[in-house]
Length: 398
Image (tube, rainbow, N blue to C red; front, side, top):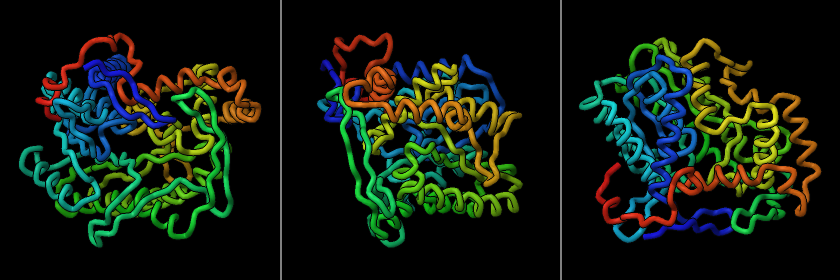
């Protein structure tokens, strides 16, 4: 099958398995060529198949630590006739590369929110993974969560609070920008978003691991968060997602007390930089802000794709000698993004953007490349006119 990208608006409808392979290989090379560090030996990553979760797994395995990893993700399986999700193939290619170097790379495909998944992972840690872990990374990104105790399905939303918000967003398919407005959230929508994207599930995982005695002394856990600048504040940090992130950060404080007392360890959030994600195009103004930010940071010599940013976080901060905590106890690798100079330049450019000049003022080309890379397209060195053997791929397991 010849696989070409299918995009509707800013929604990717398919992926390229061999493009995914090349991008994973490129990220592995970045980790190997970057500063090497000594880190944890046994790691569990929730949300391990793309974005920050995948970059974390690659850095830990190939960036000097040589970590054995367990990855949990919710992905769509490929078949002989249909292409699966990008994360399905990312899991396969990561496992293949890790096992070639003698590392354990176990993948669990399913609902990280469920008690059943926690039970499966716990049994594997106890029976086949050495009995204890050193690090839990929480990088789950989902719009839906079924409460494992009540069975109620909660759906998150991306909305401002107390006011309507509007702004331009990128349409990848048409290579245009479109105005999008979002009404303010109801109290129920705010509560549901916190339920899905807040710290409740992370807390379940940490407490279960501690109670089941599968954490080594000095155990760490980190969950990924985001703050951003003034451009996105109304719809992001001051909106429903921001409420969820605040809950996540408050949860970290509570969990840190538990883990420090019982294991002499640490729990905190890491506030990461803005990157292109599958969801970012649906946040009014976020994709425009990100594409402006990429250009401004590149001009300052500080543009960091997801892999490089994650590796710096791990090598310099979490397992390095340059931790950067703020007054709330949050790790702040996003400090480059939020310098006054970069934010001021970004705001000035953003305010001048129109439907006619946006390609000149922001780095649309780079934003689109990052977006396509998420699904294995526009990877350097891949022949996208070659036939992809889905029958062979369907025999591979993550």
